[in-house]
Image (cartoon, rainbow, N blue to C red; front, side, top):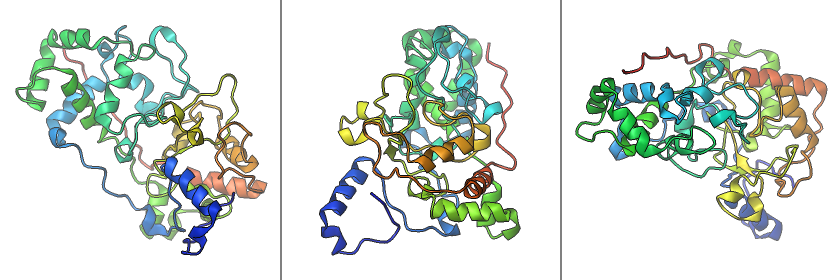
Length: 346
């Protein structure tokens, strides 16, 4: 089934095939965008924080320390930053993450950059807020393997943490809720900075090479990338099965959250920001280079159960793949967000 970027007329919407497509799109939380101009790629406002977690300097400061503190794990070896390292695009540079007792996890550690824009968190979208996401890896048996009650008592025993918690959330003490809110407050500040593409969007025609401009035209046209990767963060908050190669039992992905066959093996569309710094790619780390990723889409994907109807051979030439890679490289921040590891409270 081929999507195009025309608005559907009333008569077209009466066709059974169109109704079927719209049902699939609604299940996948997907929309069909019109061809976008530069204005559609300007940075939007991030989703506002919840009323009980308005962003303050004290809350960000507490969350920053907690993010880098390995004492949040049961082994006292793993911090949030272990899998979301500023040095490798706030990911970990591995095909899939490494958890408690050096367990190899089944999914890649995505970058935490720009998660403040996401309507869904985790590859399968099982939670909708940064606050709900923050504690998941901490209490996971295979990831940080921490008992929350034990963590709270451990943090209460660290004298240097008390003034940080008191300043950030006066009168609330140390609790799971406060820990999750502080981590979320910090993560909302982890945003990409201007890339060459952003300068071009703002009107600087010299910011992109001719190859990158050709790549962008392909991105919105023949290569059909913008069907799922659109807007400033180059994602659609949808879930898709793109027919990735599998070396074992298929990961159900979104199906485990919403048991509907249309989303079997579907995963959240990731941002395309900072791609050069966040290899390997895909939820299972299947590909090491952007060229491999594009060649996968060019092939139409493998014929697995639940393959998205939007996957189809593209017929891209070698030159067109080259131009797409150059365009994707233009999404890397010129001055990427860095961080100094804080001195931990004692």
